[in-house]
Image (cartoon, rainbow, N blue to C red; front, side, top):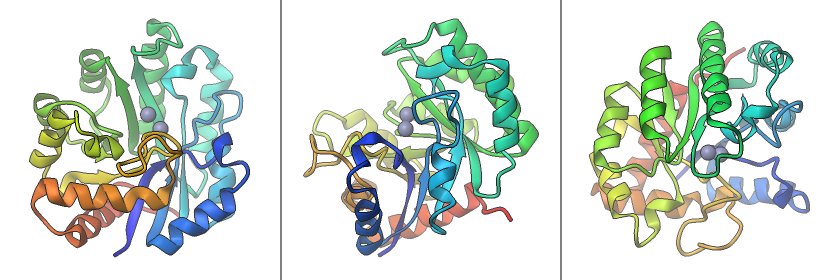
Length: 257
Ligand SMILES: [Zn+2]
Ligand SMILES: [Zn+2]
C-alpha cells in the first residue's frame, strides 16, 4: 500500500535533528509523495517548502502566508508569492485562510491577506490549501466571493453541515489524525459522507499525530494509521482509501514542468 501525505511541515524545527531520517522512514512505510507546506515562520521567508522540494523528486511544495502571519505580509510579500508561484515544484498556494482561535494576526488583516492570495492563486492557475479554525462563516463567505477554482480544506474538523457546504463549493476535504481521536465523532461523520473521489489524507506533521501516536511528534510515516482509520469509517478497505486519495492528489495538484 502506498499513500501520499498531502500536508506536512517538513521544514519545522522539530525535524531539525532528523529530517533526512524522517523522510526516509516515510518512504520505507509506503509514503510515495509528500506535499511540503511553505508557510514556515511567515514572511519574509516564503521558500521553506521549495528548498525541500528542490532536493527530493517525490516532494512538492506550496507557497503562501498562514493566517497566523497575515500581519507580517507586505506588498513585497505578495509580489514574491506571485514570482514563486511559477516555480516548477510549486503545485498550490497555501496554506491560507482564517484562524480566529489564536487570533495571532488581527482578523481584518487575515481577511485581506486571504483574499489577496486567492487572487494570486487564480492568476497562477493553482489550487489552494485552506486553513480555517473557528472562522467558518467568514471563510465560506470569502471563498464564495473570491474563489471558483479547485482546492482542499486541510485538516478538516468541521461537522457534516460544513462538510456539505465545502463539497458543494467543489472542495476536496483532507482528514488527518484528528479523526482517530475519541471525541471527534462529528468529524468522522463528515469523513463518512465525503465521496471517495473528494477525499485526501494528511498528517499536518509535526502536529496532530493519530492514535496510537497521539501526543508524540507527528511524521509522514504515521499517515498509515489515519488511512486505516478512515477506511474503517468509510466502510472500505485501506487499499481503496490509499488508491483513491493518491489519484485525487494527482488530479488536484498536477505536476508541472
Ligand atoms: Zn493549517
Ligand atoms: Zn499546516
